[in-house]
Every structure is written in structure tokens, then in C-alpha cells.
Length: 241
Ligand SMILES: C[S@@+](CC[C@H](N)C(=O)[O-])C[C@H]1O[C@@H](n2cnc3c(N)ncnc32)[C@H](O)[C@@H]1O
Image 1 (cartoon, protein in one colour):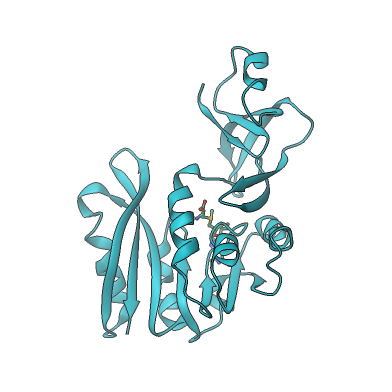
Image 2: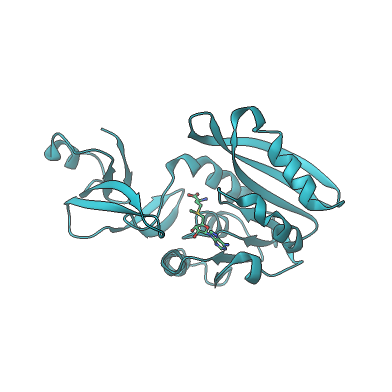
């Protein structure tokens, strides 16, 4: 069986052999099959096999994440990184989460650390809707300020002790914006999907390039997961002085 359990929904990649057997798995009450990802909005084809809708609440590391598995991605491979970031934030820090999604990083930080404020920017209205619900579900209203729109335009500038860039694709194109958001001595967590041979070379080089003469201290380089054959999803922690 190729699939993952998100909340009480088993999300499969292929047709199941025995539905009864799958419904005996712990937590599983509903089953869906995700097909190809189509169109501009990159929403997957979804076939509901058991159940009547695709919204659920997933629990991880004492946090609640409400999401619709047909519309929102949940990456199990990012669990360790979500746990690492949850505990790294120091008391009173101002955090800017440039690609907040449904609160993948913002929620664990609010639950497990004691930041001053988290500004969580999300461009997709569906994800933003769940982000707002998750802030309430996790009682983080006093800590997280959700912002709907493009982080390049709307993220507050010059105030962040920590900037999260938890997005892969053209993340490097947002490094100049991150440099405006981070304050001197602050840390950027920069994600990139990168070919194996360049995995710890290209991302730091891009950070140093975007820093435009500011001093960059590379604090950590870590592989989050294999992204596709020969390509890794990595994160670099960099202090910008
Ligand atoms: C999919 S999440 C990354 C996954 C996550 N790190 C995890 O742990 O599973 C990235 C989010 O960035 C959002 N996004 C993309 N471009 C953006 C932009 N320019 N401004 C704000 N949010 C953006 C996407 O809509 C998406 O919700």
C-alpha cells in the first residue's frame, strides 16, 4: 500500500485491494485516492473511496492542523524539520514566516516556544483560511498574525530575529526580500531543492550573493528529504550580520 494517514483519512496513490483491511488501520475512518495534479492551481484529482468529504484535523507534535487533503499538501517528510524549528526559537523573538501555508512552522513555534510575535504570510486564500482556523485551534491568537498576500510585498521589513523560507521552487528569488525582513544578527532558514552534487554549495552561495556584502555566518546545513531522483530538499540556517 502506498499512502499516508492525514488526520483520520488514508490518502492512497493507487486503488486499494481490500478496503476492510485498510479501515482496520489505527486512526483510519475515511479513504481517498489522489490522482494527477492538474491545472494552474495544482489541485489533485481526488476520488473519495470511503467518507463524504476530505477535510480533517491532523495532529502532530501536540499541534492541530486542519486541512482539506484534496486541496492542501501535507508533507510527512518535513516532520523532523517542523519539530526542529518548533524548539529553536528563543524567548521574545519576532519571527516572519514568509510561506506560512496552513501554519506548518508557525503553529509548532507558537505551541512549543515563547516568541514575541509571528507574522505568517500566505498567498493562497484556501491555505490562508486554514491558517486562520489553525491559529484558533491551537490558541495562538495572541502570538500569530496571519497576513494574506505575497510575502515580498506584505511581510514586515527590518524586524525579524528569524525568517522562515519554507518553500521550494524559486525560493532563491525571495532571498532579497528576506534580507530586507531580517534584522542585523537575525537568522534565515532558507529551503531549496537542489541536485545532489550542489546540495551544500549552491544554497549558501545564493544566500551570500543576496546578502550583498552583509556578513553571512552559515550555522547549519541539513537535508530534509529526498525530493526526486538525485535532488534533495535542504535547509540552511544563516545568520545575517
Ligand atoms: C506548501 S508550503 C511548504 C510546505 C511546508 N513547509 C511543510 O512543512 O509541509 C509553501 C506555501 O507557500 C505559499 N506561497 C508561495 N508563494 C508565496 C508568496 N509569494 N507569498 C506568500 N506565500 C507564498 C504557498 O501557497 C504554500 O502554501
